[in-house]
Image (cartoon, rainbow, N blue to C red):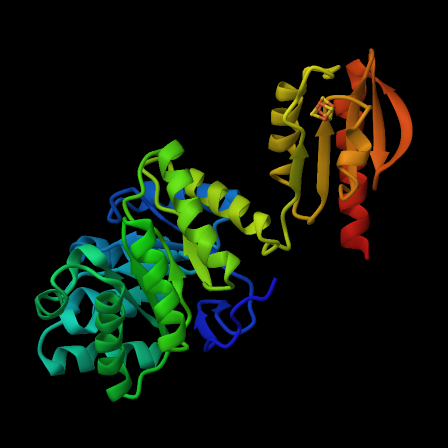
Length: 357
Ligand code: SF4
């Protein structure tokens, strides 16, 4: 697939979002930011799950002054989310934030905006403009009557212009809405209206199950069109789940170069093994594999290996045993009791070979 590559590369800590770079997975800590210990613990869990950029809320000075201590104990870029208060932005920047999320049009007087922009410039950090359909400027709502994609893009352009007028261009933009069609349309229009990297997200998408479906529908529509440079799946759930969903989404579109994928059959009357529990066990196992392997688990040998020809490795159930296969060809028979363990050993070998190349 082609991915929108004509975006401006923007550095966030030690990664670059936009340009021809991969899409980065983001999430947001759910802890009180001033509780450094709890926030760091949660961020380390997110890192372990594959989160590449993390955001924290910054509602007050206690949170802003905690940024430095948090940053020292984590390994991924830290984004600080600020609403309105330019003083908090200045503290967060001084404390070492790798990016701030603030809408310049909401900061107030020009001197305040300038102070934030100058501080961000001095530290070489970007600003994310976060347009949200639920909080569009009154002027725009009056013009369009209700939140529309055109209104959201107009809002983004308004904030962008404020930064550009101050010769600031390290900008990332999000246009979130909880209405999937509205968000998709806004991101599509934005991708044509400016070349700043886009941070994708469907906001207030819901709980683990419904939110996953909703986010996947919206983000999938955009990823299929090559739109987006970084993404956050928003769920009313443990944020580790957000990272897991984002990783799966990127894998679906071939946009993940460091994760293994499971192919498992839907099962039918030909099934010969306890496929569902085996598939879950293998999925959990490969979630820690950082090589782009395709691993198949199939219920029977009749259609198994042939149905999963694109898999690098897999097992198919046979009566009392399993067939271990690679690239559609059976390699050997393995006893049912040990077939999952043998599959894991072969997966590890393939991963080692991948990294030795
Ligand atoms: Fe049915 Fe076998 Fe296909 Fe699984 S692999 S769906 S058990 S035919």
